[in-house]
Image (cartoon, rainbow, N blue to C red):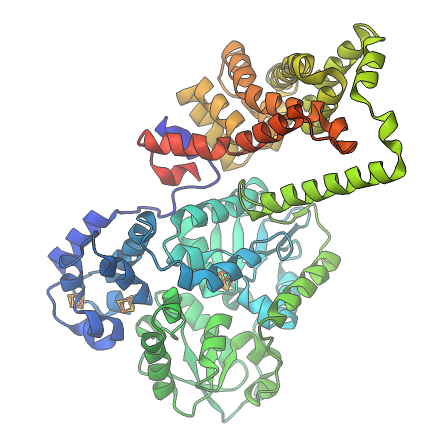
Length: 613
Ligand code: SF4
Ligand code: SF4
Ligand code: SF4
């Protein structure tokens, strides 16, 4: 069953991920303790050479788990090491291990994970792809929040040379990546990646260095470029005679092309670019890296102080809104996108930069602006991850709507017309016609992309818990089979043309390897939309009978739960809490945990957890 997990939302997080033992061994063997990296880094100064940290790592000690959260993950050690040691990789893996063991300082990071969560919410996200779009602008979170106007202007400038440019307002979830929250990162970024690839996106233009890193490392299927490389340059002499310096983001220390492009943009204003001691590959972290400030603020501030000392009186130009924000308390700093829009005003500090909590408002306004501006062929907000607050919010709204309905029915006196027994007597009067019509409708529904849940609820109300389950599971299975047969024998080309993304290809490969188990898994864990899944499975090599049997068995638990619940729904509307209703609510709650239980079970069986996300 291990490979079943490969069909889930995303690929394993680290392309070439290596586990902690290998990394400990590698650092212990290759670090000769020359001290070069130690002299550059306050974290290593405090804790010793990478080799000594690796040698003293003890998974049973809490200090081994808190220590890596004080490393900025800036990779300066990698850049200066003459022996090719990559200590940052070890410290990141130590963070992941701390999370796996429940020993990470998660409480201290709540503000950051909350910020990230807001960035991936339906409210703040939006994806708009025009007809023929294969390139999207991904501005990230910090730039739209602090500089909505600049973000919008950047999009417009880019669109002059890329007319079908799309836009994606979302968070790359790098904070979770760096905090070692592999599972969350993989599921969240995986959803975004799947959405973009399914719609034929081939190039992503980013403005945030962290987004650049995430897309470069985890989405090798597309070309990733910075807007600084893609923007047209307009040579001017407005800042002639002015010296500026560049703060390269530590995340992009090895991205020479982007660094050169930023220098060229800054130089296009007429200003002269003067280099600091630490620049390019040897740049310093601004102090924000690795979220160190949440657990060791003093240590984090040493980076900012070093940077300020090197910059002196020179105005600093950055290409990361996060760095600009972090350094602004110490030095005169600006964003290169502001600098090219209004060179003088920017250096005079006249450009408005949004501060929290107004950054959220800015992002909302920007979303509305983009929605108005971009004519889309594909659009939408990020869907909530199964089992996350998004789906919990839906559940809460559903409960609130139900309570309002109950109050409304009681207050209006309509309850007398909603007697279950009277309704069922009325239905029985139609003989076989009522169930026959219901089943016919349900059988056709999946092929017509009609949602199954409302029909199931009607089934429970009209036919009660026993016949409701029998009619519903039979016709729901028949409907799934009909869509499967239509896809396999009648509309193969039409379906194939619509299911072109890598997720669907993976599904095909996994069915070829694991047959009915994949059908069972995807029925229990809603990784794919139900109606589309029926069509997709019709294209795979699975036999009709195993498909039908696995669908029947695995759809049964949810069918029973919703029918038992809805068969007492009229009682609820009349304000009566019957035993059937309580049982129905308990069953619905139980089936909502099924996906998590199935995933846990597969993990226990030894499956590689990262593929399940
Ligand atoms: S990644 Fe940066 S903070 Fe961490 S050890 Fe290396 S140089 Fe120090
Ligand atoms: S520079 Fe390389 S060899 Fe020297 S202490 Fe650092 S990791 Fe070890
Ligand atoms: S990495 Fe970019 S998108 Fe992600 S939180 Fe930071 S600024 Fe936002």
